[in-house]
Image (cartoon, rainbow, N blue to C red):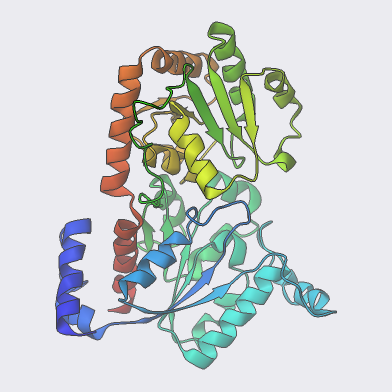
Length: 393
């Protein structure tokens, strides 16, 4: 990297992330560092091209400040005959999480081979719940730093993970919610970093101003999206009560068909005001958010939440719960956060917004501003690079 490029990175870092920490990121370090980064990545079939944590790798790669390469965990990949049984055998002792499977084992083997042959400076495992099994057993033999990102809340780790201390061998752990720092500090004291999840603010934008010739919809819309850790019981009760109070309100429910087996959903499926969406394209997803008046998101727990960030980026006010990472990604000037399971509180918050279009608009503008200032992927990329720098310098 030449000197002007290093200086440019410094200026962009100052602009996007604040004061550059001395001895962590200097122009000399930017010029001489250019580390070899290996990412163990994964994309989920239900996420579009503009969603998910993998956007971080793309943002860092576009900066040109690291020499990057990738290994992918490819769920459903066609494997040679007999290899599945071998992988299951090899990964049997490594299956510490219900998300870990033989595709995870294959990805770890590919990472192990690449670290031996190409000698990267740092490995970042993007989803430790899915893809961290046996690699740390080799750490002493590998001359590199290993960073992981843990996406699930502490409640999931206590409930589902066989060995909560399995992350202790990492050199650093990134978590997308402040609350989880304290939990993981028991296993990695001084090595846990809160770095927020980001959102593609260029793609997820508020609806363009309508032309005079366009017809303005005559009824308000609320949107709900997702399955993981969602409080379906509360959702059903809120939707049912809101429609009872104001039958003109519409609800767009973005929920895969395979996740609609909960019998409680039949209670709101009876309402013609409820519109169901599945397997939507990126453009369709954005349009649903843009056409809505607010995001309704009851959850049991949370770290980062793609639906929350994408809706906020599209300029929607939020009605959700006062729990976990929701607190890190919202502010009171655009979000009503109620106790988990507070149906009455959520109904009141929704009705209050529905009845006040000006408040909807004001809160939507505040949500979009918050996302632009804090959660654009380029800003998150700089913060992640700072974690890398702490380990490599």
